Length: 337
Length: 260
Image (cartoon, rainbow over all chains, first blue to last red; front, side):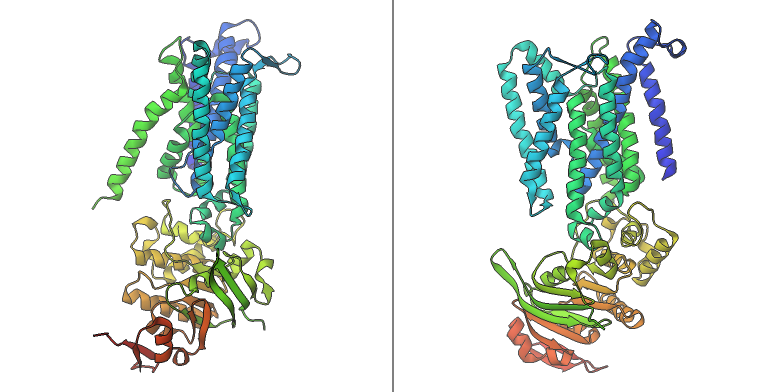
């Protein structure tokens, strides 16, 4: 248990450092570290452009993977993923409304002392919270969240929001539409450490919350009835897992858009490697998700340099075939005669 | 001493379809009760109410305390349930499944202790499934799965064991083995056993007390020879049988009269 997570943690830290050094512009780390506060192009790129981005990538990759693991257990379905909760749709819509109606507004942080950030993430987070409350209300009957309803309400909510987004996309002008598309595809381009700190806050709290429920998550995969009989207050567990993962997904989508595939693929791959014990699976998926997204984002920055690909394209491009291969290999083993 | 289980006028309905009407009975600590009755007679619902999965009208007392006054963890140390055909979509090994039975004994944040491992191992050994420990549950046959799930229930070290069709999916040898195991646990450890059963002959052989349910009510309750009569079987199941007695110990055994 410690060994796997130790190795993954070391890999994550190495990946973060390596990814911060890779990029269209070559960087000398010793230069950057020698006098980080003077006008030093190496330090400028390292600390202002690359480091926040890598930190964000690690948090969001890890967060998506952890939410995937938790939701798959909650819904009793190994194919569940963070997009299914409805929260991502709400966040996307909120962000888009922010982009359309306040495109040039900037939110001054601490009276402008800490820089300014766009309104869009804040609007997106509000959207995420509203959709979370709506989906929760529509799936709660007599104090219990019903997984089946939760899944359906989330998926339907997202389709509805997708229609609204397409509608908005058709009525705005071409340049705005381009911006909306980029937002929807997901990207990690932020430079504000405040945003990074906001995300890490949500991810760390959410992760610890879910990790503490690791044993109960194991039990709920046995089915709701069995979990009750093994001593889990399932109703409370379902509410807590829903709220914790919704808050995490809301925060993540607000900042980076919906980066797909991590929440589905990483939990599955890690289950093959470390097994299904959530006390081990959750941290391992967190670390692996972080590693994966760091590298995916580095590729997204390099492939078309100096232009940049939405990182969602990279995660799906590599994630899809890899995932299919893993499934195929597993199937060949499972159905072997 | 308070009975292990006591119900007073339990009623339950799914929407407007009544499944149980005013069921009152009690099970003493250390008793072995087999619940019989056709499909839909309310056996599974009754077990679900006794294990606090379903709420009901009426009262259930466990060891003299109302069932609502127990917490979930407390309940799962008091009794264990072996369900019918659980759906498990995730890959767990048999050993991991059995260790889950220990969840309410160790802290929610703690890992399993040496003792938990020992209890799990002993439970696997009791159900003759030690050899399955490292195999994945979805790779096991129906019977092997059932034995692992019984092992998980034993790992909870319960005082009361509730089983829903424990011998479904089992071949003859393992059916007899499971019933012998239940009887041994009952005699040696004083485990209270309540099981819903379909096989009337095996029920008569192994359970000193039987309770026949018909349409959600208790039709008869007593020793095998009191409950398994030709009239009862015809009333409840609607088929004609002849009751004979087992050659070894004289318990009633059914011979079905084929309709020609």
